[in-house]
Image 1 (tube, helix red, strand yellow):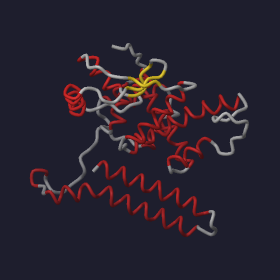
Image 2 (image 1 turned 180 degrees about the vertical axis):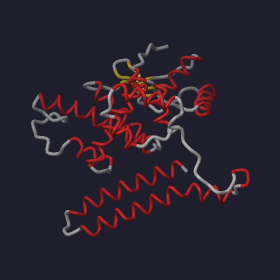
Image 3 (image 1 turned 90 degrees about the horizontal axis):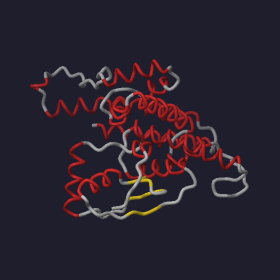
Image 4 (image 1 turned 45 degrees about the vertical axis):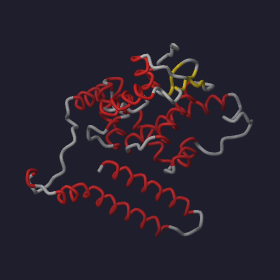
Length: 276
């Protein structure tokens, strides 16, 4: 069996599978074999970590496809783009991936600028900032990309102190806002360590939604109404935001900003629906 290298940073970019999903994947591979090729770069695995682990454990044959990249930052960008296109991600996961993409892309563009070329190999100039370009790619505002970078920095800083705390943030097991993470990105090492410890000790544990009906007497309709409360509140806030932007439109060029706002609203609503 081919000896493949595992890069911890590449591996940890991928959302961990829960026990049930992992067991189903293992069962499928044992029954049907590994039909999809694993993707490698310089003999380092960049896609298919769970399949590789299971195949190695059970001596299941697998094939590989090798991809060429100029740097590990370009590999990171490829992994992030693949995950975003492939998975139904939560808002916090999307922020993390966009932030990691931004940081890696800044390094890549810096390398090409230093060489006097664009990423495509042409001696042209970069008219858009990295944040603006990625904002167009992900259909969010430029400022959102910059905020996402700080969120990603905070999550990675927490991960260096406690990998389990990072996993809990990205899995949605704990309740911590993107605003809190953004502020934490500029925190001291002691502050980051304290937050990591609080996460592991369930200080940020999600609370059950408030409901006047005792749990043992709650009806299915009560549960639906409770689940709808955050969505109803978000719809009201988003409606105010959209109406505010509509009132500001004075020329045709303003429509582009409104379009970006609408797409951001859609992302937020889809994220809320995914959590219901």
